[in-house]
Structures are given as structure tokens and as C-alpha cells.
Image 1: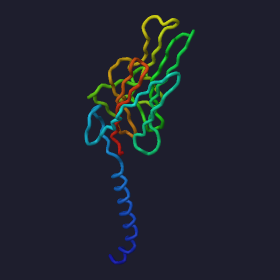
Image 2: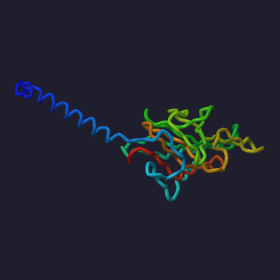
Image 3: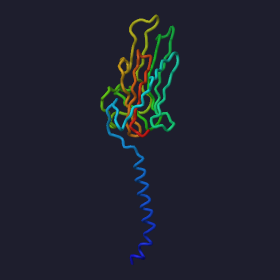
Image 4: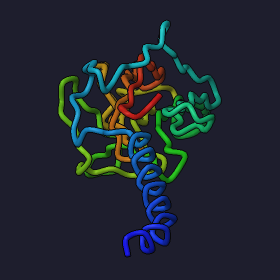
Length: 199
């Protein structure tokens, strides 16, 4: 009886073992991402990509871009933008805008309640359940009254201080950050980026 049943079950058993092997291999290729990370830290899961020298976007009457490919698949996941224009006889002498854009459905950025790019402090903990959004989001907008320039420069957005901050990012449930600073609302400096997914 066993000799008759075993030959019929052998192909089914081999197929089952093959599927178990495939499932196990696919699990090994999926990155194990932490539910939360400490911003600005270097661990075995996250190794920052230091930009040396730092990238400085200083626009003059135009828009400058800096693209980041987090997972090295040849597609730009994030774009940092620095825009500046100058008006004579208009409402503003100088107007600049720094923003960040996500470029695909799996990449998101941490925003605040007003949908600005949130300025995250070093050693702050972020997690997957925070407020993540896709699209283009303002870091800061700056303008001067005109004409002639009178009064202080006006700023809108959380990145109006001269402090270095972090942009929290998420792709495929893996967390990371971009270290950046905006000088006087007109220069965007990018120092490093990190992501806990596979390189």
C-alpha cells in the first residue's frame, strides 16, 4: 500500500518543497526595517551617506534641483528644490522657496499639521505611524517688501531658522532622513542622507 501511494505523492511533495524554498528565499531578500529609528544616529541598520563637500543650492532667478536615489535602482525617489526670483516694481524684491518632492508612490516625507516639511531634531525618534505624505512640500518661503526694500524679510515655513535640521523620510516602510539647513531663506545646504533599506 505504501509503495503505491508514495509514487503518486512524490511530485506533489517535490512541488511543495520547491514552493517552500521560493518563499524562504523571497523572505531573505525583503529588508527587515525597524518600526522606529533615532534621527541622526549611525547603527548597523543605517549608515548615512555623507556628502563631502555638502551640496549647496543657491538659486539666482531660477530653480536648482538635487535628486536622491535611496535604493540605488536608478530612479530618483526624492528631489530637493531651491527657487529664487527677483522683481523690480512688483510686490517683492526677492522671493525664494525651498521644497522637497517625493517622486513615486512608495516614498513619503514627514510633515507637520500645516503640511510643511517638518524640521526634525537630531536624536528625535520617528516611527512608521507618524504623519507621512506624498507630493511636493514647502520647507520655507522668504520674501522682502518692495520697493525700495523696507522692513524685515518675511518667512513662512518651519525651516526659517539657521539651525541644521533633519527631514524624516520613509520608503517601503523603511525609515531614514536627510540632514539639511536653509541659510537666510536663500541657500539650501544638504549634508547627508540615510535610509535603513538595502543599498
